[in-house]
Each structure stands twice: as structure tokens, then as C-alpha cells.
Image (cartoon, rainbow, N blue to C red; front, side, top):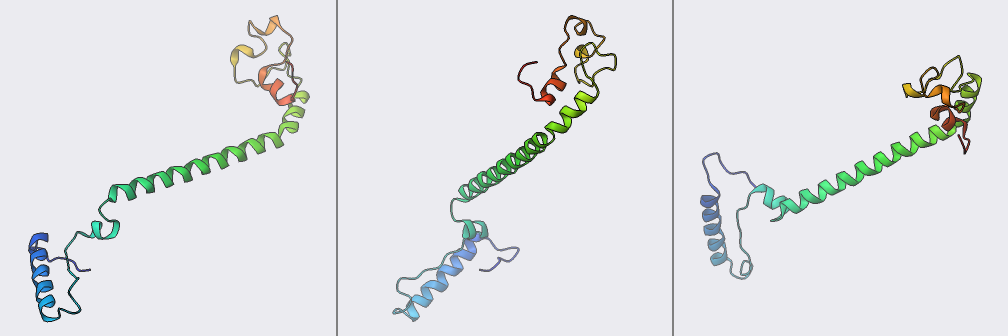
Length: 138
């Protein structure tokens, strides 16, 4: 493998290599009878004629590795949340989080916090604290 000079073209290099190949074939017909030489760009020499196929396969592999990494991170987050479920339930019970509680609720939904119009209609716990407690009914 060689690099062309700055002013050389692929066609001129190809003609020169073909001339050298013919000359070698004439000088040594027994060893060079079925041999030839050609000039191709480096990308074609490395990847072949279907460079797009190699790049597409590489993209698919990268996407699969990314999907596996995302699944692993999601699994770790799920395991951590399940491991801390008792702790979260104990904290919810210790703060006496109820809809009508005077202490208030750390719910991310403002309409579900004590003191809102919906809070006085029901004595159930807020959805965040209900989920943390692990009960099947609210």
C-alpha cells in the first residue's frame, strides 16, 4: 500500500501500475500469468466496495450497546427503589402524611396536598405516600 504524490491522480497511477504489471508478466510469464495489479482508494482497500454496509453494521452495534446500557441503568434504579421501599414507607408513616394532616405532604402534585380543595373531600393518603407504603388499596 502506497500513498500517491500530491499532483498524481488515480488514473495516472493506475496506468503506470498496469504498465509495470504487463512488463512483469512478459519478463516472468510462468509466475505472473494469472496476476494483475490495480490502484484503489484506501477506503475501498480497507472496507471493500460496500463501505456503507460496514458503517451501517457499526451503527447497529452501537445502538444495541446503548440499549443494553440503558436497560442496565434502568434495572439498577428499579432495584434501588425496591430496596428502599421499606425505608420510604417508614418515613411516610413517621410524618403521618394524610390528606387532612396538619403537617402537610411532600407530594409533587400541589392539588393533592393538604389544604387544597381536593384534600378536604377524602381522608386517603396522597398517591406518593400510598405507593411508598406498599399497600394494594389507597
